[in-house]
Image 1: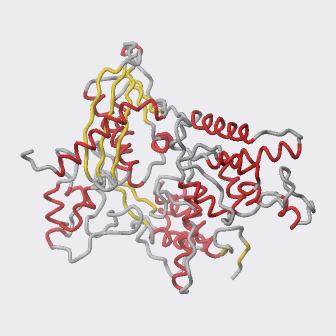
Image 2: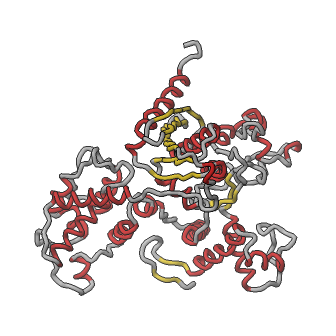
Image 3: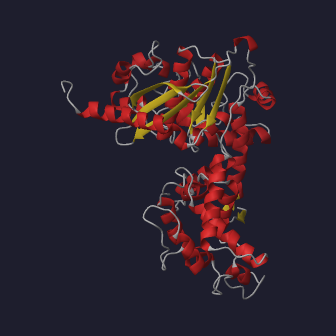
Length: 502
């Protein structure tokens, strides 16, 4: 089997597995866009009277079609459903109970429920789960089912790729799934890329810094010892202290770097440990919390400091410009804040023009926020209406149970705010949230598997407004909503532990 060397990850790239992952990309396109030209041509020739996921490989067929079915089989291994209105999902035979692995109800199927759909478990009045129906059919799964947020406004069910949080197939995740399956068959240890996803690619920071960190972790940064090892520049020492320049020395052990880290406003402070390697120091930084008033609660400060130290080294080496440790730290803080402030996203109405006669000149701003408690699996939701002078018109909050993540809680808060605005017949509204991840998902229409029902509703609710936008706002803009949401969550917790008579 032909293999090529790959930098990082699994060490070697298996060409056969990679080819299967690429073929699965075509199969995913057929599954996601059945009306595209490719899907229509193949359906007319190979599966005009069958479901693409169920069609069998014929004894004789074209090489191309056989390859597409190989990719289809790969997708089927990790394919599930995200619940919208529940009309397309068979409750007993489809995988819909988890967004991370294939999961369906187990046990013998009662004859009376052989054709039970997920929609039959949803109340037609509230469009939420009918608790009596779920307890009757799936008594051991009721809590799990109630944590799945359905669409209340008619959003359809959606097939999702369970190996990625967004539910969308990618060649990268497909390749890793093939490799993992192969290593299980061969009884080998399965290396995982999860630490890469969490420590580099999922960081809330600039793309250039993610690439910078990737180079550091692969020892691909052109510091002195790497240049000497590759016979590029022998005898290249640290520009600050003239010791041997390694990645660990430059960023943590050099007196200049230590002086920078001593000034960083992190909870408990940060002092590099002399015996730690880069990975250990990096993991310590990921766990550290930036202190006020840096304003970087959702953006890790460490990547910007590493980048600033690297920039100061290059400035001194190539342009003979020296910066103090305090100046280097200040540059990191300023750059991080500028990047955070530049992430504000506006979501205009692309296909619906505002009727000039319906504009009253009064545009309402609605700010929403949520507080979530993992132990309770509950959330407090809050939203407020603001007038043209940014005066608060009214504020509302409520609590809700069976919430599996803070991101789901933020989505529920936005949906509740939109429903309230529609009930008040507001037509020109700007919605603001401090959840950049959620706002980006809505703007890019990328969604998340566990947010499918909520985001489907948000798209549908846009149609009730003449002018509507959704944008990111800084944390300090929703301080009032944050405290109101926390109060709603505290009241929920109190009502949960106190007797009804108290």
